[in-house]
Image 1 (cartoon, helix red, strand yellow):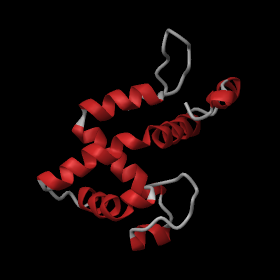
Image 2 (spheres, rainbow, N blue to C red; image 1 turned 120 degrees about the vertical axis):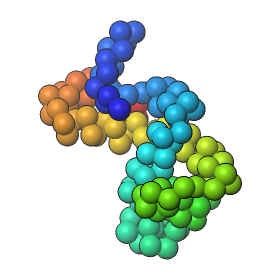
Image 3 (spheres, one colour; image 1 turned 180 degrees about the vertical axis):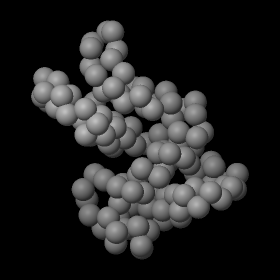
Length: 128
């Protein structure tokens, strides 16, 4: 994913929630990637127990933790998901555009530290 795409409408240099929503709706592979990202954002305890211990706005919410963690491990292992689990991915992943926007924004800044100054201009809109 190109995390530094500049939109001509507002010159915002980061992936927006709307861009993420569009990709999540249209790209099954990106939904799988999102599940892996969300799982990685969980704490070690949350990953090990498929729960949500901390209310830190990171990783899966409690209602998605059991299936989200289990499915993310399957995806990470290269397993084929059942139709039921694919349906869960389809419903879970699009719920996290804010977290994914924050994640990709941080990734873009890490790859290009000059974007940190640009990000400051949009600090009121820090969650994309």
